[in-house]
Image (cartoon, rainbow, N blue to C red; front, side, top):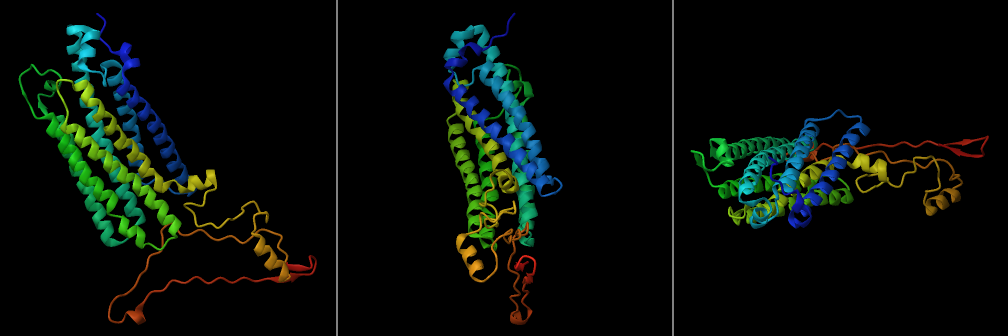
Length: 369
């Protein structure tokens, strides 16, 4: 006997098709983001850190979740009304569709709580590697511990919602089940709190760092994507509170779409701070860089006109490669000030001295550096 399926209704399943298209595009962007992240590490000649491996693990699980989501939409009709499913597969086929739907949704949820936990822990570990202030590091490790606790609680809440587990998709067997609506709302609410901690906490420290304003603004836009994820989580909670068990395949479609956006955008957001070396290599962009129009090809064609004029008037030929500004250190400089009673005599100052020498070249009739 052929198992019932909703493949024939895919063309008219608007919510399901929208879900598939959005997830497919974002999954592709996730692959690009992770690839640029790993390439950036290679360009910096750095070994992969724990935060990189966590993102790779999250990406791997995200692919598995995407495949489950495709099956739910194509085979089980996620996005269609129950009346459409009944009309397509009949009263005998509908219970089998609903059982498969519940099994896949169960797997999908366990993927979700694990992926978002990996992404948050990766971001927090990256904070620890970048921001070295002792108080910040302690807080970040505490936030990582909170993420692990929330992940364990959410995983167990979903895994043990029904006892025995089979009662999730066979409601007629003996056992007990908790409220699906309360479970989803609880997980989403705690996830929202952790999101706020992860995104908002580093903002004051970021703006107090000694770095160029353009770089600060660029990093702020990166964090702004985190606020978009927070807004999406709020919308998820709204749909979860309105979840209808009578028309679950349709009412769950909105939850499924917004739930998919959270880990997908989270992976992209976690990769953005690490990607500038790859961006500079591909686009020659100075948005994340401190270079000032350096021409690495050795040509002076990009040297500003007024600089050429000043050199020529001073008798120094303007040909030859321009001076290059050295890169800023990987970690931005921070003020280190002793605020004790003898602060004026014990301040720590970091200075850099440059010495430029030139002499006349008798063969060229000019100066050489």
